[in-house]
Length: 359
Ligand code: GLY
Image 1 (spheres, rainbow, N blue to C red):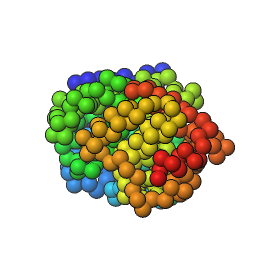
Image 2: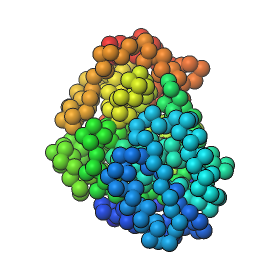
Image 3: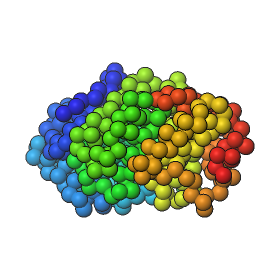
Image 4: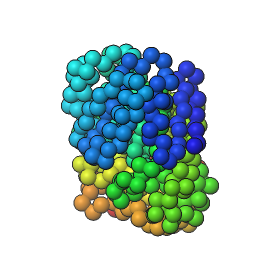
């Protein structure tokens, strides 16, 4: 087992990464102070696979009262209507300040569950059990929780750190090819923008990654969590600009996602978005053509999308990009690569340059 520590003073927590460790959730939750009850939040897919049932059983075996709330799978659930239904459900279940919400699922469940936990009774504790690659390497770590507005992803939310994160990489064998590729989009993001060694490791392990090799997955998930934990520990609330660097490809990616009405999975939007960001950086003289070609090669080898879907209108993309939380006074601010494994926030990007890479 690998343990990654997120160092945030009294809000510090551990991320346990292993394979076949799902049943450790009960004893883990029992080790926290005064847990009166656990509410397991999951979606229909994860429920059907039996993962939330195993989590609930382990919690009950540890002597903690538990109930399971199941919502429809998909980004559409990350909305105020679902949050309102869940607030009512928590009330009906007699949730109190000693209760813990346990989010078992992908990024939607973790973000929505964390948001509901951050807001119910002015905040209750929550614990993350991410079951998709995307949630394991990114969204379950760092305490960003929230819901989408119809035209702006993650626009309403809070910073609410979990009590801890338990990652069982065996759950990755249950993912559809698209869900798995979506997670790989975020993994490659870490390599390109923050860790050249990880990028090289990915280049050298394309085949094991395609086969979802257990050892390679454990190694990659813990490396990504370690990169993210180091950044979050230094810039929890994204005020210094450091945490914003985790968003390479995201401003483009969020626009593609929302314009596709979320039929494009998050990590696939990020995959196309990071190629756009690399091309833009080349245009601005920040990286050379070889950098872009190398990134493209890895994306293609891993089966990740690289082209903007033809039905997506460039002017609409630009409009959505301006609504990004990094924008200031409507001016685009984008994370762009400066060399392999390094990136920076670039200000005052000209519309014409963005439109050029979109076409
Ligand atoms: N996904 C980027 C962050 O958590 O800051």
